[in-house]
Amino acid sequence: MDDEFQSNVVRSEFPLNKRNLSWIDLVLVLGGVIGIYVFLAFGTLWLMELWPHERALMYLNAFMTQLSFALLIWLLKRIRHWEWQDFGWKGVPIRKFFLNVLGLYCLSWVINIGYAIVLYNNGLTPPDTDVYSKLLGQATWYTLVLNLLLAGVLAPFVEETLFRGLIFGSLKAYFGKWTAATVSAVIFSALHFQAYGFLPRFVLGIILVYLFDKYKSLYPSVGLHALNNIVATTIAAKLL
Image 1 (cartoon, one colour):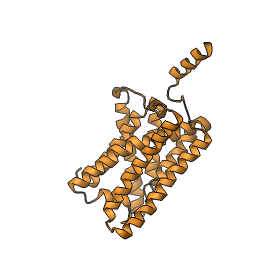
Image 2 (cartoon, one colour):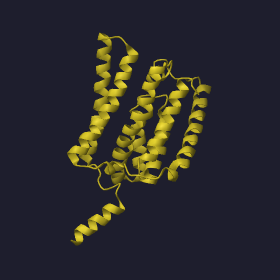
Image 3 (cartoon, rainbow, N blue to C red):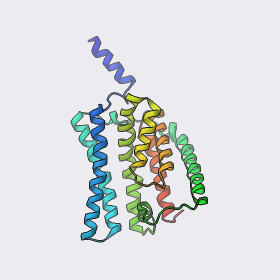
Image 4 (cartoon, one colour):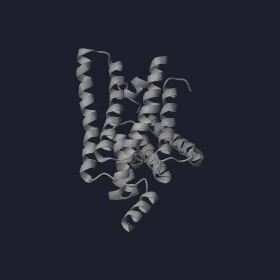
């Protein structure tokens, strides 16, 4: 009875860290993430030879990537018998994090603008072959809807659950907060496969980890992630 009572007390005090991935599980998850990217990349190239509609296939690849990540998360939840709270989906009042999210978003924009100025002064611009430029640029009304759904809804919810709730949350148990934050942000940025935007996306990853760790909830980091992507999408569509 005492052991059961003590266990319940620990769960109530530390609901976010009730469970973490073992090393084997963590390696399997990272391998699954990389495998999804590789499989879909080669699959897209193969389909492009049969059906040369590049932009449509890029959308298919992007949506399939997010849905595959969601399936990976769901499978882990079922196999390990986790609750959504174990991933970091814990309620927190919006008023507690709203201003902090806005302030950190403005900080990320200052960093992005400074980074872009440095690159521009050194003669560096995004390549014409950049996937994000192709998807977000030259938007019509229906591609804008697809971009907002993909970048503003799917990506924030799925990627925050995966990179902050699952990967950072588990790495933190082995390495501590800031090493785990750095490693998870590197993975988050690197897996976007965009060398030009690696640094600002890495900084964004650190900020998202900070929000997740500060509020012990994914909702603030999802809010910032969604805000960042929605504004970037509307700017690329020349609506702002």
